[in-house]
Length: 208
Image 1: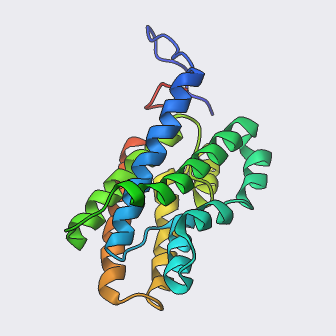
Image 2 (image 1 turned 90 degrees about the vertical axis):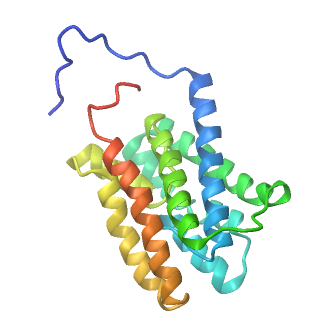
């Protein structure tokens, strides 16, 4: 059931194409920086990105390409359930993320990065980037697409749904990474999903 607008509050204007473009560009950059911090500390995050991390650690495949390829099957589901606009924006966001992840190491490095700081700061950065994408009607694909769909369809919070999938993925990570790294990855996942769960609620943000 849709909630009626509050009395005296004007309907929010949709984002312009420029606003959407800068939102996708900046959000993907924030998430890419978080990915590099996770990678530097030998950590991982959840969702499809976490699966890409596991494959990267196991087989040394390029992380940027994994991020792009693993999301391809989800676009059909997104197109059918969330529409072409959401799907095309998500495709653009994931493509930008893959490029940032490949390019940023050429310009940026970490001489000293404490793993606890990496987990928390990267989680907050990634959560902020994903929140920006959600507010511009996009996501980073994969499980994020399903989480957005369930929030729209059933009212389940996207952050809570994402957290459940992340927990399953981190359990699988114990078979590949040292327990300390997995536990720190869990800390990062909690920081990420806290940002989304607290700040992304239906009816709270009036932008379109």
